[in-house]
Length: 396
Image (cartoon, rainbow, N blue to C red; front, side, top):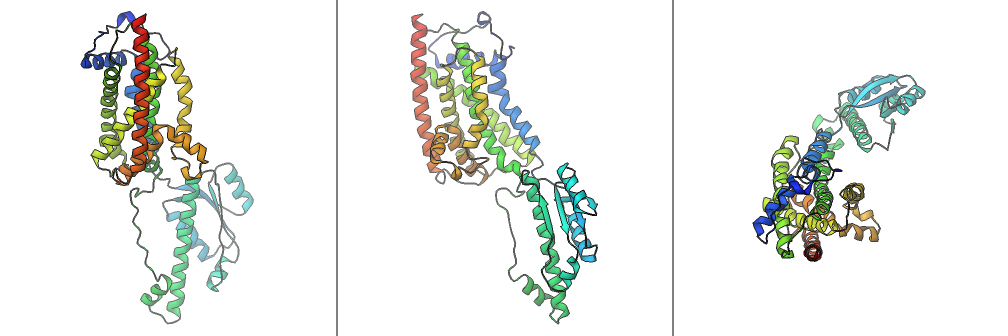
């Protein structure tokens, strides 16, 4: 195998030129599997990246976030709050200090990710029926840690408040059931759909996989296109040539997606609720659109390193434009329209709704129409570019 930056000896590769559809597919597989760089990107990168990201996000939720407690009250009620924080899965009371100065030092040096401040007079206010305050200082730059600590503190404080209210009502002559009805007049029974663990992995992994498909196709086909220019091709039917190549890529990515959705997803517990036929239709259209765009762009590169250098940096902007890390509704209109030019933007929205929320093709009809339009446009451009390349090669 050859590394990405190495030149490939074309004389050692036996490529038979023919208008045969099967021969074009055979030659495309031979080109891919005889080039280490292209093989790594088109065949293995998708599985490697999926495994790496899945392992990173496999725990789904953050647990036992370190916090520091400043208890100036030192009462039974303040200890009750601290014990609740200790018992909760989201937080771990790593430090109990005497003053805020020590707590801030731990917070700023990342020894703890939150400060819980219980002021003097907390128990007095609670027992008197007055409003009792608890101070919570969190770091907003770590949203996952911020959420876990805030939810745990809120849950513990509300539970303590409810139990105290029940005790007060019972002491005044109410029976337990009547007291519970007053404290909690509406019983809340929540069921989380589509992402039961409320984990970040289940939220972000479907979108990452979709973007990986596009980026590996653009980079891999760009490198493959540079290598293909070294071959002396006979005049072929450009439509037949493009369709045969697209079928090659559909086979490769179809196998990868089957492994991901049928094996890797269940291992890490990521949700998958979509109808298989709907997912197949979406990904088939998406692979054709992304591969057609990649085949078109491949004619612009003269060095095999160029696609890697020019397209690799675009992965993060493409992910953002797909509305994964930042809501699309908050984009300026012109930036939103630019994002729709990439097949990944429509495919991410369609697959997330189908694959993780159980929607149907009708439910994602808007994204489906855009994806079909992009597929036709990029397919036409790929055929035109292929026709020019084949004509130029036959003239040399």
